[in-house]
Image (tube, rainbow, N blue to C red; front, side, top):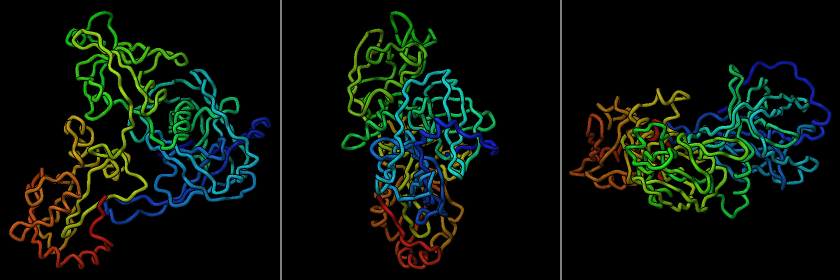
Length: 484
């Protein structure tokens, strides 16, 4: 999400010592997002302008949302205006980080790479670096007020976050803003609220994890363990769980199927009391040597990597146990309802004017920033509770998203947002299932069954086939299907 800033005001020149350390380049991005309401086409092109932090080995760090659905990326020297094309080397939408490389690394010659500041704590002052159109550096100082675990824009897991109080000013290249401590990179702007003047930042420890993983042969992404929990402050809950000894730990409320915790044997009702040598209190916090008390999920996302072994100390019915968990990254495609689907076109299948798609959060976000309220509530429900609703997993949820007026759809024009269960008597768990089932009409008709009313839709197979070319021409559909 693009940050929102206060009204632009006259800039104060940066101190000379800071100006000499300038390690920024402008990043210009053009692209086109995919249209999930008309999945065979793209939306209008966009352009974004941002700042990138120059790192060692001729690379530039930016946020992932800057380069989502990009067609072209270029770097621009702030002092000279010289430009060069760049490629996206690695992108992680969950941690909102991306690494760029100019097509010629010598383009960054003369710029001092930024080191990372890993020691930021509450009470530190960080500087936001921005650029004027002239290339002059603008420095705005802010105070770190909180270090906590928060959800990033993709809402997949929680990550360490710095919260700052800072009066940011608008600059046209401020889509990505580096935050600097003693001329070292302490973080990148994640989001900013100009009314409250509060800024959330992706901190250097998360950036360090990302960069270390990039050095491996295949970037795997941040690990997850796969269970939900609840504090055990309630003595009745502790009694119900049979906890013995001093009150501590968190109560396991759900365990994701086929995830590391489930594979290690963690069960609903267990109380997780420690991770490794770090004890967990009743709220779910451990004592970090740098930050003090902070939620234990930081031990997983910031301190471990996919493939690492992690010891969970638990109580089950009052008995202490240890489970050894092998962590792994959960791909977006491993969800029943994928949490994001960027840089690739959506799958779809058009049948006689009926448009079928697979439910994803990217589709729900077509309703805008308030999609949780504005999108079809049944679909929001399926997304939010997918783990509980499909404990054994399911390939995909296929939906009838809308109906194009055509000869085949007379009487069906108002139908939309239906969950498809069967086609021609066959269970449907993906668009591939649907495409296959359509090829087997029953008595010349294609029978589509839905969870919601009207429960059943019939199309005459011969008429659908005969009128397909006219349907494509009428609605400008280059192909009636795009399957994974």
